[in-house]
Each structure stands twice: as C-alpha cells, then as structure tokens.
Image (cartoon, rainbow, N blue to C red; front, side):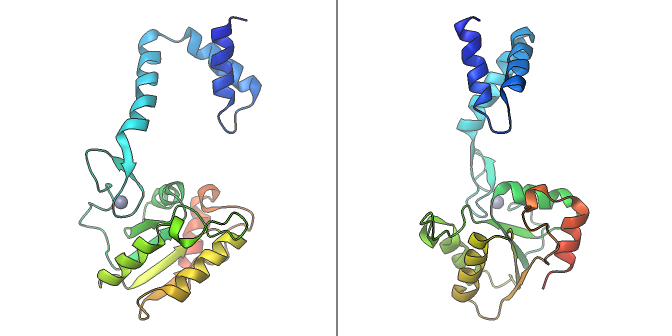
Length: 197
Ligand SMILES: [Zn+2]
C-alpha cells in the first residue's frame, strides 16, 4: 500500500468510533472523490480550528466574527430560565427537542476528585457571576448527567450559588442511568425536563 494512503487510513482510524475497516472504506472514498470536494473538505477542517471560538456568555460555540452565539444574541429568548449543561453537545441535543427557548451555560468539565478537576477549571465562576448580576434569572435547571462526577458538581453549585432566592431544579430521573443527554431521544428529554423538580 502506498505510504500516503496508509497515513490517510491511520489518521482516519484515529477518530473516535471509527474502526480500521471503516477507516479503509473512508480513505478509499476520499481517494476517489472529486478534487473540489476534497479541497473543500480540507478547507472546512482548517476553518473549524481557526474560526470557531467559545461564546463569551454561555461558553458554547460561535463563529470568530460573533463573540456571542446565536442563542445568546437572540433577544426573543426567555431570560428567566438558565439551563446548565456539561458540554456543547448536550446543549445541541436539548435544542433539537425544538420547544425550549431558555438560555444556557456550558460548564465544560465535571468536578472529579479522581482526576483533580476542581471548580477553578470549570466555568462555574462565570456562572456565579451571571446569576449574581442578572436578576431576570429565576430558575436554574441543572441538566447534568447522572453520574458521580456530576452529582458532585451539582452539589457544589447548589451549596455555593450566590443567590439564595433562585429556584434550582434538576432533570427527573428519566434518563437512562448509564446514558447521557447527548444520546437520549427527544421524548425522553421532553419527559425529563417536564418532570424536573
Ligand atoms: Zn452563547
């Protein structure tokens, strides 16, 4: 096999969820694809690295040209509910349900005593600032996944939140225990939010 082709297969196989057989199929697909497609593919890969930045409000993702993402800059959104998620993929999954018009805050990582991820590494400090300064926020939904790290994170937020009159809710236990928001179907998510308390 040509060395360059082998390098292509290896770099595709490095991607998560892709086994060697799939990597070979994709490499051959790219090898035979028309050059305009391949050029565009490679440009988009570079753009993604250069042009996407963290939203300065919710810590989701936005284009470099807008420091606020589409949700944060949408003035028709409900300012009274702040939905706290672990990562941007969870935010996208909840948005896919299509009926929630609230705002978000992406934490980034969980507090893990094992991996020594502590609050300073999360966006919790900024979350507390948002809650302290934005009196329109009346409810904070902890839409975090059901595992030990996120239980610890939720507890930390509850105990240290700077506004005591804030209603803090969390998802009902409807999510599959080992599963996550990212993989839950829309009906399951809908029920989990409906049953929050
Ligand atoms: Zn945002």
